[in-house]
Image 1 (cartoon, rainbow, N blue to C red):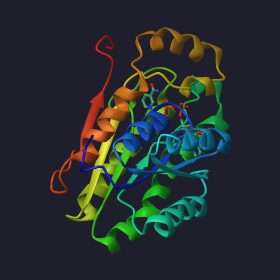
Image 2 (image 1 turned 180 degrees about the vertical axis):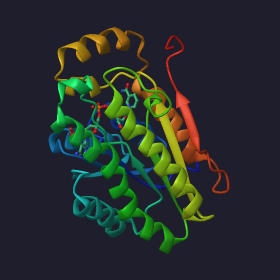
Image 3 (image 1 turned 45 degrees about the horizontal axis):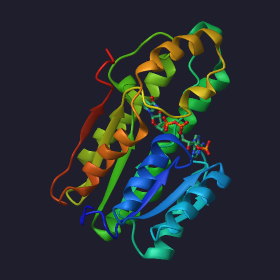
Length: 245
Ligand code: NDP
């Protein structure tokens, strides 16, 4: 149990499954007040009650990160309940992969909206609060797709390159009191591939996902970044299966 995490108020977007859920469980176990957001409110309710039943601290609110007002609302909820926001984990993301020539323009836009604009909304809602407090941390979840592009993943990788660029820019500008961490997972067990509507991309992904690591492996990286002393800023972590090329 990490004393540097105990009592911290940590907002997690996309906490209804996969990496966000695993992070919520691990951080709550370490004594954080987790504030859970996602669109599937039934999942959040079940997760929050399983944590509170163990005596851990969790609240939740429905959140679509595409809507700036909803991101502001969940930050307001955390402030109202706990009077501070220590960390925002910008984790919500979608990955409907397809070859560019399939022209799935709506899916391109959805990835841009959730993966890029969603992270920006987390920053827009959280940065003024952290500046005012004089402390805070953003943990942005990117991907190994932020370092290399592969077929069917051009737009997804573009959104993750963007998250990496935004995180580095934020780190430089945010000032000495605010930490910025980029966590880039390799293939990890989650529901992420379920949004793929393209047959070719889905078959490729099935093959690719055979070596996946459990979501707790990424949650541990998030915990590591948060539990460092406030003058230690872990900026980038890539965590992938040993067998992944
Ligand atoms: P999941 O699909 O299991 O989780 C994605 C989460 O994002 C869900 O909780 C979903 O909740 C939420 N979400 C999606 N759209 C929105 C939205 N508009 N507003 C709020 N929440 C939203 O996948 P992962 O756990 O794998 O994904 C988490 C992050 O990890 C993503 O950013 C992903 O790109 C990244 N990642 C994952 C990898 C992997 O192999 N699993 C590899 C590299 C990066 P709901 O539908 O209830 O809103």
